[in-house]
Length: 92
Image (tube, rainbow, N blue to C red):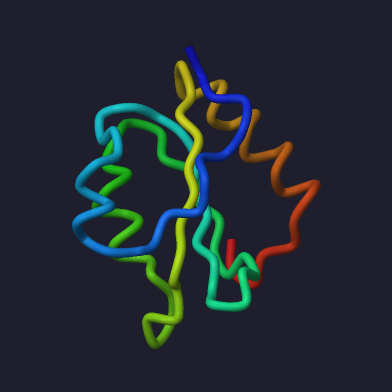
């Protein structure tokens, strides 16, 4: 089953990233210390852990992350489009 809401804000540490599912499609966002969304990304075929760690933001300003897991790639695409309508991240 896919998630309808983002996870709670999670501090962006390697230890916390290791706890999330890695083999599923979904979307994630990275927030700075003011809790502004600085990056929003879609994962189609797994690899969310690596992507979050690699996209911490320029100068590592990412402090928190949130994610949603999708049932399949098509649903991840739909989630991404819905979120892009709501939020205006600095980077997409």
